[in-house]
Amino acid sequence: MSARATVGGAVVSGAILALGWIAGAAVPAATTSTVSSGTTSTGSTSGSTSGSTGSTGSSSGSASTGSGSSGSSGSTTATTGATDGTYTGSSVGTRFGNVQVQVTISGGAITDVTAVHLTDHDGKSVQISNRAAPILAQEVLSAQSANVQMVSGATYTSRAYLESLQSALDQAGF
Image (spheres, rainbow, N blue to C red):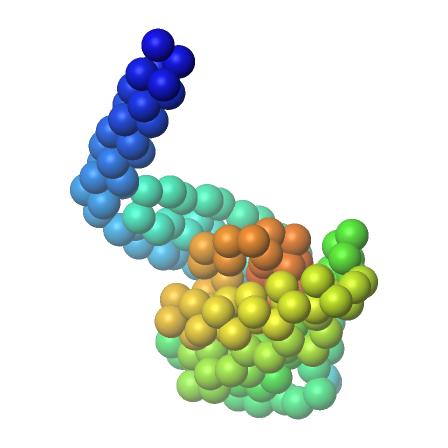
């Protein structure tokens, strides 16, 4: 009886998961809209960004204000209102160490994402971060935003990475 109940529960769970997957795939992709305003002074950018970003099956809204400086200055592009340059996000602390990300904007697009610092509490956290960072970078370059899926098994690193990235994108007005 116990084995039958276990198998039955697994089958029902699988069916529910499959239906959810199908229902999520049927939702049309949401559009992205961003409204940004800011002022720029020598070497620094400050402003605020608000908007909503959606992906298949989910959507999230965010409002944040960021200020900071970058090592470079550049021109503003008409496409996104982002200023070309390299921006370093805030250092985000996790229980396994700090994470900090740097992003390069060129021609109104994210062209490079680099982890300046990854978790380093112990060998395991270093291993997890070293596995997750290239996956997150590739996803960010593909999505052209910080609205990407977290890496399975690297939840703390993923959250901190994306938070630091969003901080850098806010500095750029992206």
